[in-house]
Image (cartoon, rainbow, N blue to C red; front, side, top):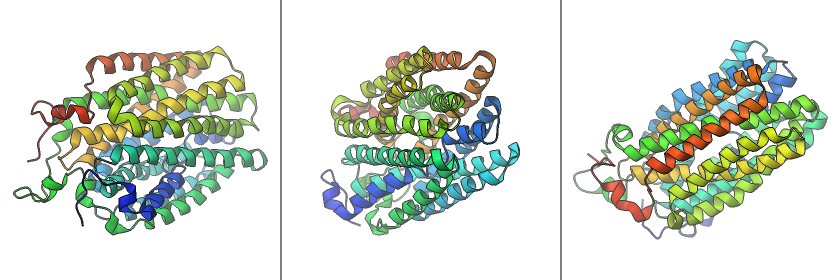
Length: 428
């Protein structure tokens, strides 16, 4: 396969491949997270579960995702059949979610959602790897921003359809929407030519390392995850970010459902749409400006906005207020989604473990999300929704202070950081 250099762009790799990537990110948006926040509404309104049991189910699923993340990344690094892995994962996620209306026992519901979460661990590293393997490292930032923009547009579109139909058909409509999006995502995946993906570049090996004399195809070992101090700091920041963020939207959905059961799913869809519409331009902006502005200040903004969002929710129970505050999620999540693979790519370039490192940090992310759902559920039962929101806001504020103090900049103007013996491991 021809060498990918700094001048590679989507125009050079072909408009057809670029459009296939756009479609993949758009349709995969509703599949990669399974039922997501709709699970809480379904269990609350249809199964009549309390918030603590709902939180436990979501935490069980998150733990399964945690266990699967790093092996999924390692599998993507080694595999030359990334498209087939994404198709298989989409089938598993959809099948597990479609079985949910037939189940009522806690153990069975938890098992299906755990299976869906484990399969879903494939999507994020696979899409990032395919993208990197197509466009190369120099065009990666801009393309990742575009990926995230289409992903958020897909989420907004799916939420709009769910919101428009759930009022008449009930929460069950989200299950059939998930199935339709899954089929479309499989078609989009298979429309990407296999030979358009450079599997060496996709795993984080630069062209010289991948094919140079004396290196062959022997990337550095798993010690890359433990010997790169900025990578560990960034992993810690993702834990705190998602500990604060993961439970907020499900809690808002529960509050909206308690106000009006029939409108719960529709109002949740409005919340998702509002945030996703903000995420689209935010992700595009981050993709275009991350190299110039740097990664650190942009991620600090995401943490600050997250803390503000948690502090604003308790001010009113009015649905219009809750939806308005949810717009802030578009800024924080839009930034995180676009920056996450960029920072990991910065710190693992040349090691050949880009995807396993993504998986390891996604494990930290899943840990934060799992603890968030369970902790917030118990706080709600004991002290109410406002106490839970304020607690989550405080976590984000602490994360902002620690990130600002400890995390170095990793952007292209700080290449020395990534190649120093003290901070980044070399290929061995």
